Amino acid sequence: MQTTQPIIAVSAPTPTVGAKESIHSRIYRTSTFLADAALFDMDGTLTDSIAAVEAAWSKVAQEIGEDPAFVIAATHGKRAIDNLTHFKPHLLAHELDAAVDEFESSILFYADAHSHARAARGSSTPSLTSGSSSSSGSEGPSLMASAAVSSEQLVSEPMVELAEELAQALSAERDGAAEWELEAASVDRAVRILPGVKALIEAIPKGRYAVATSGAKTYAHGCMSRVGITPPDVTITADDRRLKAGKPAPDPFLLAAECLGYTASRCVVFEDSPSGIKAGVASGAIVIAVCTSHAREQIEECGAHFVVDTLEDVGCEVVETDEGSRLMFTVDY
Image 1 (tube, helix red, strand yellow):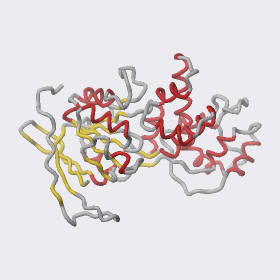
Image 2: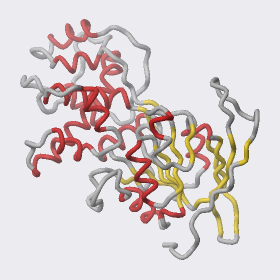
Image 3: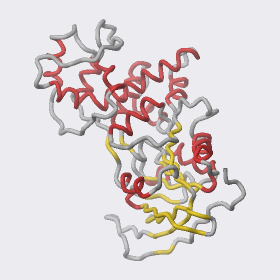
Image 4: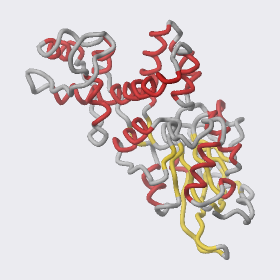
């Protein structure tokens, strides 16, 4: 691991008047800096599964009698195990792993249900994967079981009204599905890749970037696979036993950098949530915040060195320096 070299130096911003202008007439500037590696958050940074995540937390809120908007705001960017410990304090320590797995499988179910319903339209009955019973308590195969095993087949589809049709098809196979499952199938909440992600990842050599996410392995790998992102060899998930704490603690980014063979202070972190941005700053890395899940005014005071609209505003190329090969990032912000 490299530990004796100086921290990343950020070049002084150079105003580029008229070079890039938003619809709000905000003048952008361009800066460049060098880093050894890139550390990416996942959801809200690389992928967009926010609709599915919010639906899953809304379901939890309804179960515990809380306002969904409050629960959604309180949980964003934090580990499911921390959120469930807070909102479901009755869960015993040995029950938490199963609760996290069930919750994150429900996210993938919300993401996939609409496309699965579309695929079932041509059949007299939908093909259901055997699994645990649904939250309605009925016996038999659960629709949700298919969410955890279809990590490569999600394709975004146009919105259609399918709730009644799906309910009729399900009745031929089982005595009623849970109401939330039927609702999930009627709304397109497919996982999508965010703008600029593909080009930026392709510009960074293998072994020079990692993912550090608040999602557990099933959810994290499922989201990335659904949008064509191969999870990098270093993918730090919330259920990694080496972590002592999740975001906003810097632990996930510190561990990701260590696994790549670099110190976090010589890396760049890409994040979208306030808790993740704070974690990146605490790690000592250069932090680029993206306005994909939060309004600019909600994250610009969290300490990020740069705030960009999307990753289309960030470029990367490999350059040779006296210290060897490094990554040069260009940021329009």
